[in-house]
Image (tube, rainbow, N blue to C red; front, top):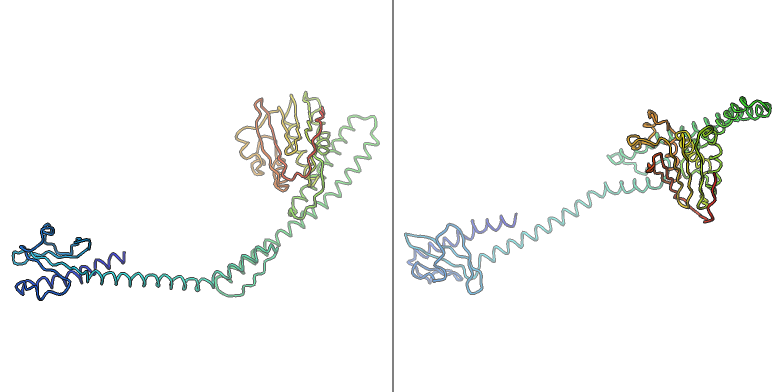
Length: 394
């Protein structure tokens, strides 16, 4: 825009007035060509070349091409006569080009100066931010920035330090609380479990009381495992100690623990093992996942079958129960949704989802064509799958 404006300004206020002045001077000198400046040609109405006669008087510059060269001309009506002046050597065009070159150079150096100035002026801002990023990426639990300035960056660094310190204090209190609570709960649970063992040994021949005590024992064992799982979930993932776990063994253990839920129900519980899968993980967490999924299937299946299929990369739990409505499926693993849900799944699936996320696995829910529910757990930490003949457990 500046170049365009400069060109129009030069033509209107410099070139046009000068050519007009020379044309008027030519007319007043009784058309004496000898006084015309070099590089200019003057014509009256009778001497204008035929190729230029179509140009009409205007109050601005006009351009044309003569013998392959671009020239500037003015056509004016003076005393009722048509006159023309042509700038053959493009003196003013050269001046215009020189001014444009000056403007281009000035613009280039202005941009270069602005870039250098902005780079130098922002270095004082970018450098501290780069230091903050590196110190944050150091993964230290408590941040201590090396920035001691009192400007906005220093204020931001101190605010982040204080916020991080409060968060770390809160997390530490949560860890201590979870650890203390789990230890405090384990003691009475151990006492209850020991008491049930004594009762079972002294209630031979009393089946009604034996069933009640067995139920107390199962609940105590499950509660102990739940407490252990919650304690593990309260820790950060890097603090967990993994061991080699055989999923097949845990499936059989949790299947037997859920058999009491199927008493007097016409429901078959089938386990189909396609592969023996060993995974580096926490057995307590996997047991909680299996128990919750198995219990849900047993509690919501009144007749039909429950099928568990273990493959090298996934576990499928399918039942022919009442299923889950489409409205509840959207927030099936959401804790707040399950708190007020009428489906009866409670917090179990939200705990399952937390453990699945902790183990870096994935879980998916589907509705089979024949009805019921299907949960698919995808393993993401496989170490050694072994293919073998698939046995059936009824």
